[in-house]
Image 1 (tube, helix red, strand yellow):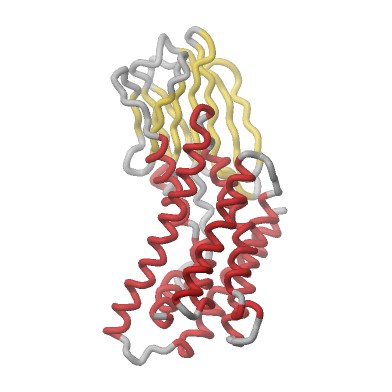
Image 2 (tube, rainbow, N blue to C red):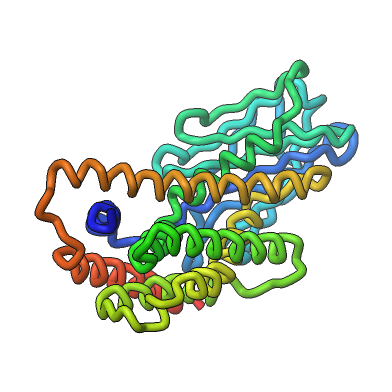
Length: 324
């Protein structure tokens, strides 16, 4: 089993020299007074440059006031106001979704506090507000966002793959993944509810460092090392930091005030589903590689895997430290 798991890890890391910074953007349109609506557009940013995404409205909508923009927490926030007779027929489009492979969480709040939510992406770049819409299913929406985030979160996936490698047995694997899940779920909740806050830049650097350390242990392959003997303790410890990383993404997306806990728990469930899908893919590849590559062994892959993961994670760490 371990041999094939390493193969998938090899496939995942070899063609990629960058970490995903594919954080979702968010666009909120909220009724302010009479015919005035507040608009807040938050897009990912790094090194003083924001993701190139632009918002367009239908001809019946006009911009009011001066657009105000600023950088904050690896994001660029734009605020302005629009005017129109009412929300019925409001059309919104975002340009640049295809080029940037980005998602935008659209949230429209009327004068009664009702929320209509949708996700704009390369497949759906346009949205029209209708009066017969059904209330958004927050559970399904945030579960989907959680699944999507973990599956594009290459650093988190590589960490999980390394955990599988050091677990050695099925029982240890179950306990190791459980420890990681409980740990990052705890800090996700604490950080999102602002009970505990850490600056995200150093947290992301340490997340990369966690992969480097595991890669070193894989390379050494010492059965009596602390990492190999106690993988559950390792996954739980670093899982606390990974939870702050998840919370940063959820902060970018935003939470509906009236359903905060539903959205928070749904996002966390989505992360776990995505994590399980990834692990299942590793197991599926095991059966395939067992049929096609009978001579494949753990030792044949160990050094290549450890150096590939370690080198990639080291690059991320240096990149993130430089962004401080």
